[in-house]
Image (cartoon, rainbow, N blue to C red; front, side, top):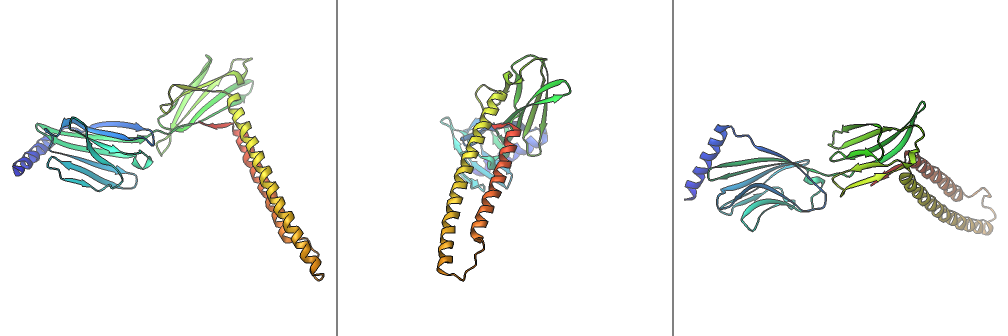
Length: 293
């Protein structure tokens, strides 16, 4: 019986190749961290002979299969599994979807009367980084809003009507950067204009303004100043403690050198260099007016 069934499967596959039936192509986007189900066919196991998923990921190629006799294969060994619905329809479960699961999922499933071939391009949604600033071009003022490195591409509009344009650029890693430029009417206050961004990661739209972004940058600068103050106070406390110890050693040993303690000078130099570095980071953050959402 099983031998006859496999002969029937081979005949179906040969006829499918002869008919030149093209596979069905799909695209799928999923948020990271959620459980994902991929369906190859709506047919039940009463009609299906076997299901094979050939999976091409960034770092490997593997296969997961199951036949009607219960035989199975899994060379992925990464948590993916074949499961059945309550009506005996098969689906591929990907638990806690991550960037490592991005790839091409090819499914083949022969059944009584034909075969199903499906190719699914699976990708992950990526939250864009929203940036807004103002540029001056001669006597004209232009508001710029950018949603960078997201997937899929974000949609940008403005809270006021005007002359504006949108450019979208895709990168080699499959992410999209969208930039919109709005020519402000004369006398318009740029801080009262909202950049409206829509993305599939959000429910609905989000509005951004220069006040919003500058306010977040201000809190970032306050946090940086607090961190600098605490670190400098701690390092100075350690340096003073070390200086007292060195002075006590010099008093107990009159022949010791009276030159400035090397440890104190080293700590002071470290504090100064650290202050310069963090100040540089704070300046760049302030000049960029960038907010991650």
